[in-house]
Image 1 (cartoon, helix red, strand yellow):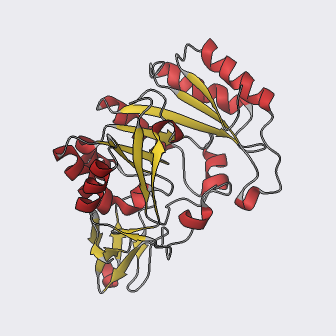
Image 2 (cartoon, rainbow, N blue to C red):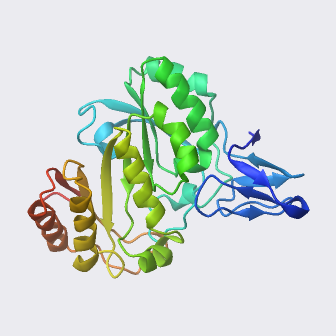
Length: 289
């Protein structure tokens, strides 16, 4: 469903500049931004990602993963197709790298009603990247707040401060993916950059949003312990010892199907390093240790 987008301004020659995420795309008439979701029609920025869900399910909240927020509860999970990154290791590429994937038509109010019907205390914006369906997420989160329902983002954190500031009053928790701890690797692996993600984490924590972090250890990209040490030092420096951290095992996916799974010993060693840095809650993902 077509809807006028938020956070943009006009440029010369009918172009518009999108200010939702750090790509800051300048979009020519009848063209789309890098996310392929936001597009310029006659000098106005619209979004295709509104009400046209590609996924809708009731999940254990631990699947997000959130281990320290409403533990043992169920969450109503939803997604609209698209993403503002192009991760080579994407496990949901069939929805994140495609935009013409529709399965359910739900208004924000209908999501609230379904959440109550399923007796879920929370809604999770997940599976794809919720930033790209910002308008739908914001409206749904506002209604959820008015109905006593918690809201959760499972996100790459690649969003500009201004739209995040407008969303935060209606957020309760989030799991943010830290894809690597090197700007060079971030660009190679995702097409994005690290610093905006770190700013998002800082902003969420400073506003008392419950945050958990996931670091996927991708062999030859993000599994070297020099990067992991730098990440842990960053957490230590910012006094984020209380922030739960998930080290997840990589399995061959998408454009990295030629790689091998993360050695379990690497996951164990990363967890040991985190505890040595004083991180209070460290978990293994995609593997039992």
